[in-house]
Length: 509
Image 1 (tube, rainbow, N blue to C red):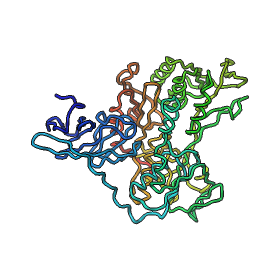
Image 2 (cartoon, rainbow, N blue to C red; image 1 turned 30 degrees about the vertical axis):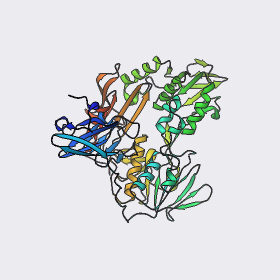
Image 3 (cartoon, rainbow, N blue to C red; image 1 turned 90 degrees about the horizontal axis):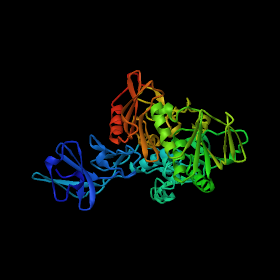
């Protein structure tokens, strides 16, 4: 049988080579495509995901959609539309034709427009926050052909960007600055989206339905989305000037750190979570000596379990990272760091703090919205005020899969919540039911994670961590509540699909 990638759909492929519901890769002249047979329909789209160009042939088909194995983007096989982030751009669809027992892929089809937006829509939408949720809400409103005014009020100095990359490829020096924006510079003007940067909102007037800026200017809204994100927990250590601590939350933070480490030989990272360790990997890629100080005994042990945590530690140590676990910073003086056991690290040029974040709730609190370790929203991401929605790091929503009220700080979840808010502003009444998903990169090892356990009491490993080919099931009272994978991207997709089918007996209202 011909290898999938060598199948020439321009000259015809036998129908028997297209098993029902399976992804078959091939070419049309010099272009790669994937083809799926669904009953009597034969559907063909571009072969690479529009996000990070993941090979869709290694993904899965769910109904009339196809999902990318890298970061779980979802596309319509019929229209090519990017249905779920992190991909925002559509795939091209191709016309197919069956002649006898052969299947041909012909020309690219003209893209279909979204249906007309409902007339029951607000005159204007104001979005506070220019991150993943805010951008995706504005983008989806325009994709759904909303014609009202859209204003994004962002405290950030940069247009919405690929936040996961700031601690990964950008900091490592593998991604130039021009790769970081989620949209090209003229996108906002072209789509009539007013994007105001370096703009801080001081208050919300729910009666007048307007927000006020620190400058005193006000903006009326028909619907308001709060997507204010999170901010780093400050590091406080004796003798350490706050101005000399580096955090890694924004693109600007990453640029400043990238410049600062250019003259540094030794860096101390405080915190052995995902951000701290991704930063360690990126700085090691620049040839900088890295020391990691953290109070826990195993990096990422609380999230990934001790065995995976030990693997992560050994992986970093094999790349030259020095760990000081079970330790805290006691004081800092003249390029020397003293730990709480009296030991010292000399010649320290920079200190990077990665000890967690907390949600920015000040605006929601000022507005009198219901707060419970986040902004409380219902299944439609609506707050206690029906004209105000919340999404991203600040939102606490009723998860239908666990039956619990949860808040997560995942980029993809923020994007998908923004998309759901947009559709609900337009009257779709679409509950948010996405399963939490994130990925973390450590050198050449990617860890995918689906689910959201507050804690687990058992983990089960299938495969080999050392060979970087495994699945880790995290269980609570015998039930699988999360799955991590290394080198098994398709398994991660299948786990996500399995979680989607689970509904808690006692759903949170």
